[in-house]
Length: 266
Image 1 (tube, helix red, strand yellow):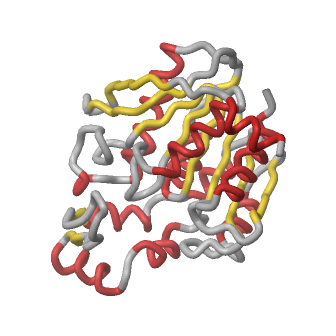
Image 2 (image 1 turned 120 degrees about the vertical axis):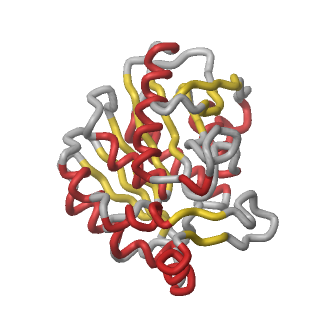
């Protein structure tokens, strides 16, 4: 009941933001700002979503209502940010995170920075966190451990064939913003080039891994366990009972938010 009251009663104050990435492309997002805060959170969305998606906004509001400054932004080629979707790369999203941290550090004051990634955003966050001493804590939601194996989570046999034969695939997702958009094979190739576990082994600050018990996209029996095994102390692994990949029900989202609050502190 306490959790529900806090989530419902506090006013959400939002500010639209924009900043440049390393290629000069404009990345757009939103700052959710409480009256008082000491901790800032950057939330990295999944693929092929954007900061305008329902999940990032929902979590951002939870965290803002808990007293954290929250920054959402869309990676280049996603949502309202500049860039072509077909040119999207996870390695570029990692660079976009640096641009986001630079922007936040320049324009806002805080004592602690927490980097949170969901799904592909968790891949990006895990690849980035150890490279930036400004990141104090890391949270991975529905994360992947080995990209070379996870490639089959994202792409069908037919899509893999198209990558090899055509050099790209075309998405067919009616009512989705990516419907009829294509993405080049370079995105697929990075699944065999980027090392999530190796990067995580280099991160030596507090880590929280959260996974849904009934995650339909990423197996709960494998990926979160491998992420946890590779990570340094202090670390914690939490499985949310019955939850799916997006933690789509209110009760699951609240559980995730409160576990993160316990981990982050004030």
